[in-house]
Image: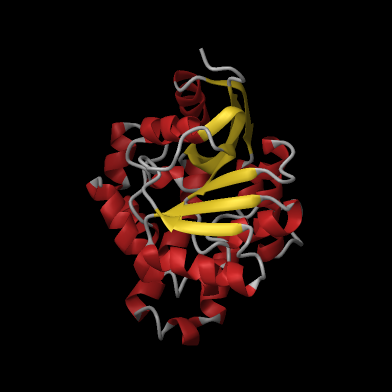
Length: 281
């Protein structure tokens, strides 16, 4: 296992109990179709936007790469009647996801496993959809991630991925100037490596993925940060049992950093989809 993957595994094992008070059941950004959307609505909107790009999911067999504590898997199984195999390197997250699926009466539709997304050790050619929701930025080798998703898909299967992305790559001077800010984000969110939508497009093509489409949704996700800030202040007492005061303050500082990066430094958010060739050569 890559050292970055170990670090992120340990990070997500630590935060699995605390983050639901900040993020809700889905550890990802929201898509705000209107400013009146609350955070649960917005996170569901992002799941549904991905689902729309993935195509018909009814009865599909889906691999959920980076399943968190199971929020998206439960939404997919409940609303699209599909079967979801979630994978994560966090055993704490997987345990929580399986428990939540059972509580929702969906254990027959959802199974979450401790696996490395870059080497799942699952059988090839078995899934209809590879679902990569806001986990690729944590992967140290995105080419291996995309190639592994391609491997486990059936011929004609689809891959859909959303994540934080650069709208433009930062210069070396910008990285150096923001070094302390980037380290603060790493402590709050894990060790990330962002890329551009065009780079993901290239990775998809290199893996043999066809019919590629992309969508930049940066303008619709930024209100998420305000909701995280509100939640951490609202649940400060409960979070104090799970986080130190320094950790909570650091998270709030990280939110301010993210606002600035989105406003001034070319950070954004994108969705990309494609399909495995129907008949492999």
